[in-house]
Image 1 (cartoon, rainbow, N blue to C red):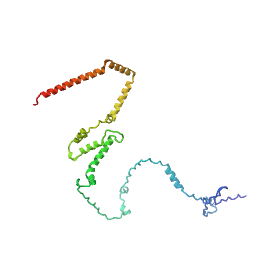
Image 2 (cartoon, rainbow, N blue to C red):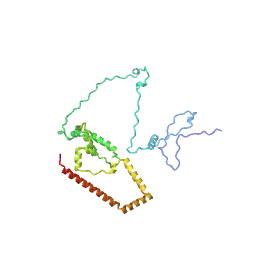
Image 3 (cartoon, rainbow, N blue to C red):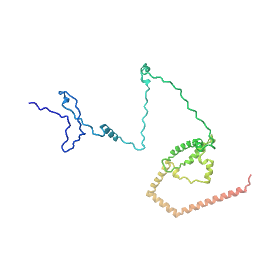
Image 4 (tube, rainbow, N blue to C red):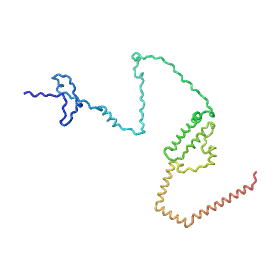
Length: 287
C-alpha cells in the first residue's frame, strides 16, 4: 500500500481562533517553477514582509551606539599620530618606466603672483587715534609683560591657592621698568629699589606681609612639625612636673621683676652714654 503523499501548502497558516488576522503581515509571493523531482519542490519557505519601521541593520547600529561609553564634558580626544606615507618612487622597482604606463598630462606652469607690498605708515603718538595708539605703542610692550606675568603667577601657584605673596602689579611694574629701552645696558633693579616706588612707599607705607605667606612649603612643614613635637614632649608627665617646679621658682625668687630691673639699668646706662657722646661731639669744634 502506497504511503499517502505529503502536500505542503504555499500559503501561510492562519492565526488561531480568537485573534484578528493581520493581512498586512503575510503576503503571497510567486514561487519559481521547479522540476517535480528536485528537492527544492518539497519545501518552499514562506516569505513574510518586514513590519513597517526600523530594519534589522538600523537596530544593530542603535544597540552598538548605546554600548559605546560617552565621554565626559570637557574631555579632549587625543589626536592620533600622523601616518607617514612612503613616496611612490620608493615602491616602484628599479627600471620601471612610470611615464609609459601612467602618462601624466603636462599643465602650463604659471609664475607666482607676488603679494602686494604692505603700506607702512608713520603714526604720530600725539595726533593718532586711540585705537592706533594702543596697537602701535601700548600693546607691543604690554602684551609680552602680561605673558611673563602669567608664567610667574603659575610659578607662585596663584592658580592653586586663594592667598599668595605674589602681587601682579608689582611684578609688572618691575618688568616694564627693567625692559625700558632707555635703560639698555643698566643692571637689573628690584621693585623696592625703583626711585618712584621708594618715594611712593615713604608716603604710603604698606602693612607687613604675614609670615604664613612668606614661608615656603618646606619651611612651613618644618615649623609645623617642630611645634607638634614640642607639644608631644610637653605632654610627658615628667616634663609637666619640671615646668611646674620652674613656675614656682620664678614666683618665689621674683624672676620677672629682677629681669625688668636689669633691663632698666641697662637702658639707663646706654642713655647716659649717648648723652655724654652728644655733649662731647658738641664741644669739639669742626676742623
